[in-house]
Image (cartoon, each protein chain N blue to C red):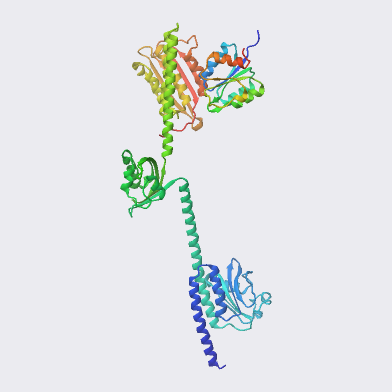
Length: 119
Length: 510
């Protein structure tokens, strides 16, 4: 059996982070870490050995785009999740799947599939 | 000429000179600038003494400055010489006139300076001898001793020049002060204009109101009519009148309370349009008596509308969020009802959503700027049954919480209270819950210590399964508060301690 893929969850709302944790665990991932602030997320995105990240766009009023840049530079695929509607910030330059809150386990599974990192 | 002829000639010359002196004095009395004075004096000095040259010398520190001259051939105009080693300097330093019959035979004369000139004899008088500010010189191309008449005329000229120079100095200072005042007034006017503020001034002694054009525009009163107190009060909406009157009268009644800042609504006098205005100012006292009241008026209608609009938006948003939560609640209840889910799970879910919604309500009251921990604790009491609520005792200082902290803490306390009501100290009729908190440290180092302690309930045991409540307390709360949570299942009851840094959030001053 291969090693389970490792995921980083970046989300300022711990309640939602735990829900994502459940969904990813169900899908066979190992949770490498949960980061609730931009600083912690940047550190985690730099230091942790991860195969994928789920990235909340807005972290307590700060955009997580620097985290996306860092993951992109490392070649780690990631999925954006956002509470914004259509008029939210444009993340299309990353060419990463975007899921919008509230989402279901199936939404997450499809996004992981699109990112080609389904466990 | 006979001696008598000489005397007659002298007298005639003298009276002509006196007449000339009188016109010079008149001219000097009208002169308001130093260059004007110098110009009059240099000509008069030469004319009055029938000299071949005259100089006007100013004292400039330790130098004599030859400011101007009137002479047949140039003397020293524009030059500076040390006071020591110069005849005019000597006259100023010694506060005495100098009469020299032969300039090349007097130790006080620097002969080298005189050799290139026509000067053979001279007279110098200091201006304001007590503390010389200058000197007047008269020079002749022949060797002769200046006469007593000439000296008298020069001294009279010097005295008149001294008075004129002092006047000119005063006039210059006045001009400067006036200019500074004008420029300060202009600066204030421009600042007020830029801020779109109007200036008002109420003179209590004269019972007169000054209202500038902007004030009148704000209140919609004509630009050229006198403003009366009643007219202004009539503009204020009835509901605000008493408050405004109280603010003004208390500022006028005591020097300790001289600041005015009041916001109220008016109906503009000309078109009846409702406007919000903000008046700030202060009162001035002579002893105990208020004599003047000065300030500015600002039309804050746009800010007020924006504020009201924001308030409306927050209320609307809260309404919609709560509606969404209610829909979520309904969907979940109906979804679970049709399955084999436990009714208790549905009930717990509904109660959690309700707790969240109530926390939103509390936060909306303060426009989501934060809320007090006491309000959150009170909320927990309200969700419990009445007899249980009486057994929840909470105490602690006012602590302002950021919205996110308030939500997390509220959900966590809800879980503790629900658990206590089901299994803990509030599940029997004797138990109590103590909830108390304190804050330690100052400023950005403040930490919140919160203590939940159950007493007198049935014996408790550690739960075997990690349910939602435990997750909230052990994972969500520490992460959201960036703090530590300790949960103990003592035989006497559950004890939960929470320690977290307090974010500094501004006090709400509405």
